[in-house]
Length: 199
Image 1 (cartoon, rainbow, N blue to C red):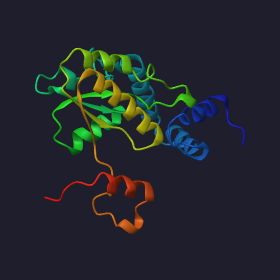
Image 2 (image 1 turned 90 degrees about the vertical axis):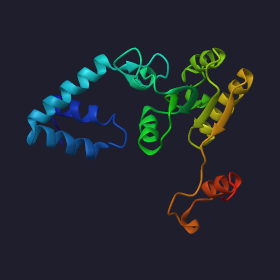
Image 3 (image 1 turned 45 degrees about the vertical axis):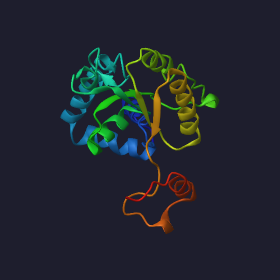
Image 4 (image 1 turned 90 degrees about the horizontal axis):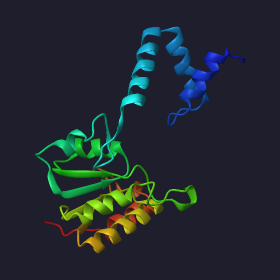
């Protein structure tokens, strides 16, 4: 079906979102234009405001509108403890689920030479400078257990070792309430290799 140029452009724009295919973009477009024009305007304004004003924290690379994000600006966080995550959404997940009281460093990806993502794209020179400054005593790696995640973890572990900084990795394994019959082999292997003493 032929759509007007503006409708077609909106559908194409919505497809840039993760998990949004042609049908989902079409449904969203029709919903915004047919049923809720005020929501469409609010969405457009919010997107424009965020695109114009949100940048990255000078220290941790998390999304923020200020020079420092609220976590880095807080005097109540432990600057000697640094958790390295892949995405800003990981920071929020850890803040919601744990009582972690240190700071973060957001990579915004994983090392992937085939995709042209190297240490520079992940801001690792900034992380190296933080380690060299001597304030960080321990790094906690909270990266995914993929091939790229493992390569990223190894690279950062090398940087930490060179700086004399302790390094730990979050546990990977069987989810709470999970049955071993339904756990994939890779996850089960990680869980078994990373087993901890029962207390």
